[in-house]
Image (cartoon, rainbow, N blue to C red; front, side, top):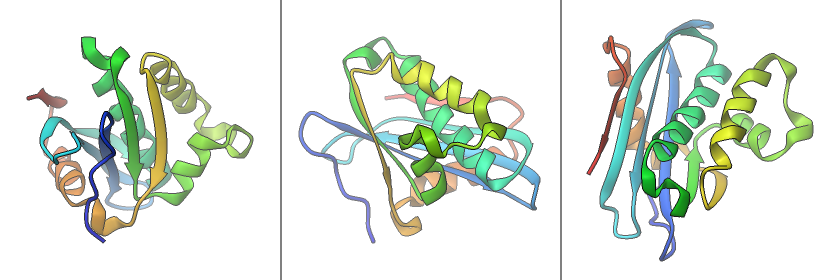
Length: 149
């Protein structure tokens, strides 16, 4: 599976969270692209020790932070894609969320309100190459990295 561009007028934000162990050192990353595949923004960060589900949710939260930090975030229509079926389903279906991650869901929900329109979608791991690389780089970071282009 390869990355597919969003429809016209939308941006696509692919995210990934990785751990080295269960739990273990974890990191997150993401990349925001337009319908032509042009990179508009990216982020990468170490998040300390976490389990894999927490890392995937923190990657979605990082996506929210990235978009909400930009003035134009309120006018954006964004598709957030993750290779985690579990995390994607939890974000979309409030009734299926485990209480263990309640604080993360609260942070995600707060940020969603700042975006004009948002959709969450599961994609296969092979469609998440750049964000996977950014997440891997996050383990060596002492400070969070984000950039807008």
